[in-house]
Length: 470
Image (cartoon, rainbow, N blue to C red):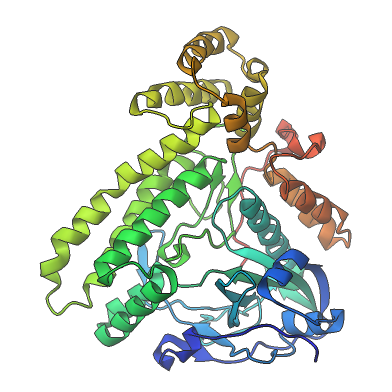
């Protein structure tokens, strides 16, 4: 084998209480659908033939230096605690230190059953694999911290869900796969030694300037506050903000029933499994604070007397809403030309969003049009928009580089839900051209000129619900 990557597997050096070592399950007829050449070079993957890539990214061959394992974690899923989850259909091949000096996980998702599969088959089908590939690369291009796509591989075997579907494996790259749920499993079990080891490991890997558990909590809260504001500024709805999908690194992870807003409505929900709207667009700031409260609770369990640290932990978590509001104001302020928005600018921003909601204006296209001077056409009640615009222009007097600021904050294109569905349907039928076209367009979100993919869906094209795909 000529496949070479600079593996250095620090997580595998932790005690085996943290994971189960096992290899991926081989598949009958693997075929590489997509490979991210740019990311591969960044990871330092060299001398890899097409045959080698297929072998590694299908799980048929463990590359030199890798130490495959399935990670253990717990988590709150839609508010209900599950004391043991873990990688039920994923294998962490190992960690590589890239050409930029950064450490990243390389994980196969859909690579077969593990001890944490909970009666599942451990497999993935092609649709969710391609969705995650496109959306994660779109988020990266948008400048939002995210896991990334390295490869998508057909397995050559069928997967049974509601029907028979083509099986596939997604190769995901992440700063790490440490989650709030990773801490929760040891806190729930009362394993203080493991919890302390995990805390030290997370600090060393992600926040070396943090001091102790409360320093880690403060750092993760800040990262998550920035993350939520960033993804809301492009109209993203996560769909499953469970604590097992909340990373310590501050990256977006798990693109299951995620979606992007078309017409703006604050309480939009797409996820078919979110029946109560827990993870609605407008509710995401509250949920991330709730998740951080669960993280704080877990971290406290490593102290001999947790009560001595409750006040500090509470102060850190209670500061989050203000952090999120400040980050949100900065992100959305840039979308109307304000690099340094003031607290009083919240009224201007909220009034614009209220007009957009009343008229069903498209989120992405409205802000793009605002940056290009033709937003009036996005509204039904144009008199109301004109009145808002007078206030806006008065606020911008004396502000420099407003158009540049707006264009840098407002993408021209996002991976729209109906385009993702069209791409998946075509790929299942053997046509990957829509996948590659959409991937190319969203990889240049601020400069694309593919007007067809930029267009909002017609009523007939609208996607009412998105699905997990597991």
